[in-house]
Length: 595
Picture (cartoon, rainbow, N blue to C red):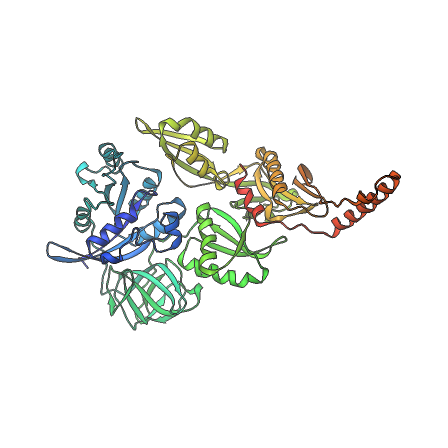
């Protein structure tokens, strides 16, 4: 066990985690040169197209140091704030972390938040400055930032270039010398932490685990602690680029187990595997439940696809533990699911993965956050959906979630960023100059305000320099109203939203204008109205497509034309009563891009 090292790579987006992982694989000859490609651990098409890591990937490396063979278990983690749950799971199953900082950009918001996460789990941190071969690298400046952040000595910061491979050999030595081996007792009852799982249509569910205590062998009778279900360990093994079966996996090591589980709900990330004969007393602690930030409805395009969508979501949740969902129904869209996501990028990725991996075409409703509603009867309810709001007369007050947002940027963009945050109902709590031209701003602001387009706007006002990170800071009372969109007097519940009273008129007007462009014209007039309760605050009309019925009445008396037009008007009125308006999918998504 003293020759095992478990470590993860943490950093901000695009600081070179996956490229560093590539070099480590090359140096330890885990992959042949012919199998190498850029970001080899990013196995999903989506990861390659977007150039981001979405899943943390586990892989085992063999490394010889001073004539001694070591086993290194590497977890490459995502950098984006929307996938921070992946990072927290990787950190929970490691003893050390490589903190990668881009020498051209310096310490960013996500660097700090991932670092605090690692420190709270008592991980040994190895700071690494990456991209030192770039012309824009500010090695000394960024090294000082890292020293200030960690309180380490300047000599402990490793200088590397993951692209050229410079300094990567020293990283491997530091991993062996600085990161402690896993602690655990191989004679104790088996305790193994499940940190990820995937669904294989031939072999059932494959769970990835780290053995904390004891040993797991092929053919053992095991049980999952939280569900209490028992299985045979048909195959256990280690993770390279492919899976390699082994007779046993010892304490401190990382591996996979296949036991022919077909029911998706029986495997939970964070569960503990133990033996049936000699079970452990308690499950492994320190694994937190995910807290979704953004809620949206997912509905099948075809109403018959409800069950297919359910099984697709269950299989996807195996691989993405931060996705939560529950059934709901909508008047406009039929049966579907209310899903919880960690952010808008997470929502976009889930939608894309459902389409690509499970061929599930879905309609997404307007994303919103969860509110606490206090009723006049003294009850407190959680409302995820505006249609679940009690009647206005029953509401005493509504509380909305607030976040603490941390923005790090160049001092030149201080003004525009302040204006953006204050427009979003933010309150500046703290400002701190990290260096003479880098400032860290701490805001308190409502989560609902950052759900739509905050991140994109922040990037554009700061020309891509600002980095952003946030965590929940409790609930506060808010003056919110429910804004309904009516088509021909009928409310479309999928388009309704809870919004702050000050912004409601503006938002309602923009919604009506946008929908007027997107809803196709019918044979009758369509009235699009935005309403708060019984009060209409904005209206647009999609004019009817009309036939020129008077074309044949050239010349002659005007009453002939009048008669024909009156007849047509009656027909239009009757048609409007029985006609229904189809709302295209683009209209549901347009709400996100109102500006």
